[in-house]
Amino acid sequence: MRNQNQPIATEGYPFIALFAFITLVFALLGWGFVTLVFLCLSLFTVYFFRNPERYPSEEEGAVLAPADGKVIFVGTVMEERFFKAEVTKVSIFMSVFNVHVNRAPASGKVIEMFYNKGEFFNAALDKASLQNEQSGIFMETEGGQRLLFVQIAGLIARRIVTYPVVGDQLEKAMRYGLIRFGSRVDVYFPEGSEVLAKVGDRTVAGESILGYLK
Image (cartoon, rainbow, N blue to C red; front, side, top):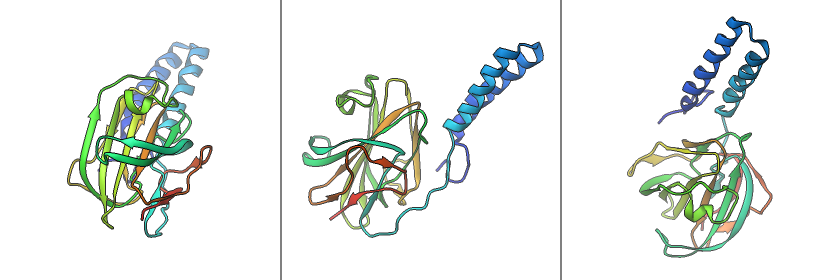
């Protein structure tokens, strides 16, 4: 899969190249202020698509955060797609200043996936979980538990990228996709899980532990 070792996510290359080219054109024209503006945009784009290394916990049953950001919801919800039961959902909101490369929260096999083309409400709102554009992965872990995690586009984010296909084996903290520019990821824990995450927690993708599977 893409972006396993690159320091900058490959999806960012076209944007970086575009802003760098425009910066060069204005620099050659001698338009100092405009050149500075596009230089800042170029540098911010590099920063946005950064892809740092992470060092996951090896604790058995640990579910890691799939995204950098802030926990904005922890609670019981009815999950109709796969579990068809009440489960615990943890929602992580990513601002434009967070790393946007997403990581697998556990090791396991992708058994089902879905994509819904939806709206673009503010990703911090509850209705974004149901109505926004989203891409979900339903995984069976090595211990036989099932876990659902969903990438959700936000008000500015208009492009969800998901690398795996059904049947792929994911390793804990493996990079599996990203969202451009500002968004959220929801994780649905099966019944009996121990959820540690609390609203307001700051998470680091591939390192922060959200909870433990039964």
